[in-house]
Image 1: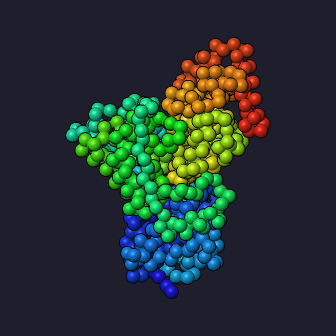
Image 2: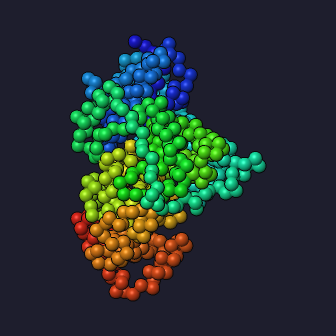
Image 3: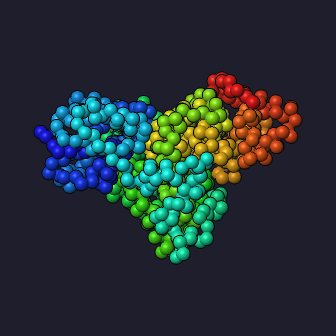
Length: 519
Ligand code: DLZ
Ligand code: SF4
């Protein structure tokens, strides 16, 4: 069999308008999709994440088929499956003998680097098209970055708001007079406020088959496979987003930083996984949120806060990723070397905040941004865990995690391993922040008000220990002037106590307090 163009669609490119499907000729072209072992195991993804991607791929292929497109779909357990993108493409080229191969650039650097060798491997032209599902191209981002010393999201976001004309008043200025209404978005959650229930999506035959497959092949991976509640089609993802718009968005702004024990989603949208594989279109999402604001259905702080995540933050982290890779992943500005505590994989710890966040991560393959940044991220930062270990964990355990979004968020934002490309100071914080924004501390065996000794909240002494260990690197940072002044006033006995508590705790959770070149 021969075909004109073989169009290779990857598992996070499940949009009918992806550039590799533009100008498709159903009479002469073939779409190739492959389930490959390499992608399921290059990190040991959460079981739910694998099930979500494989089921969404199968549903997308079926939909293309219903539209009259010829799809060559290779299943994970098909005979002869070689387990890699490159070898599956080579096999497909031998099957179809196309004139050319067309693919949209992937979301991860490792796949992009591999693609450069595909032309020689398969012996026909391989055209790599830009991924124009994003709202800022890599070239535009590079132009914006220019030779700026610091790449501040806030500046980028304003450019994007103007460029897409989002939430602007009639004179082109920000609606409500301010670009960013985050000052209104840091409320703790009052006990009486109840978050909405989450929509459930029943598994059809195809999804049940995938769940069996994942159970059989990836049973040893992290996380609970069941219940499996994710949508796996564009229609399902739209329903999930509709539910968010109606039931959660009005309070999203107020409580976006809040946490509550046993309430994993609160007023968050849980749509990043759908956006990131292509089941939802970011601009359509932004327009609908803006329309809800203009219709008077949601307050401005909610609409602005949400739009900033999609139009600002999401595009910004992707821009930083492609601008800075591959060197970005190798930086370790704080020289953090300790191993990731085992409890990140089991959830078994007496630190209640971590037990809850890791527990829900196991259960749902989801945690919201403050849980990721200020609980699991902050703890790994304070402990001085090696960035690669932390990044691997985040990439594996969250259903929405692809390296373009995970790496800047973890490596840059949470761990400050990039030395300040993303954030002007590390997001280090003691237990007081978690106490203010959650009810975790009232159920914890540790005491958040205690600063020293075995009952003290470990975040408290780890925070000061972090500042001590990184004094030479961070003392000159003007945004850390205040804590370093406080540190300078501490008597030697107090400093010794902090070091002693931190060392004892680290011995306990990491096996041994691997040396860090303390300043
Ligand atoms: C994450 C993932 C998984 C688990 N499995 C597959 C797969 O079998 N086939 C596929 O095409 N894509 C998969 N993916 C998504 C890819 O890892 C993703 O496309 C690359 O990381 C490039 O961004
Ligand atoms: Fe977490 Fe400390 Fe609060 Fe316990 S006391 S929940 S460890 S912040």
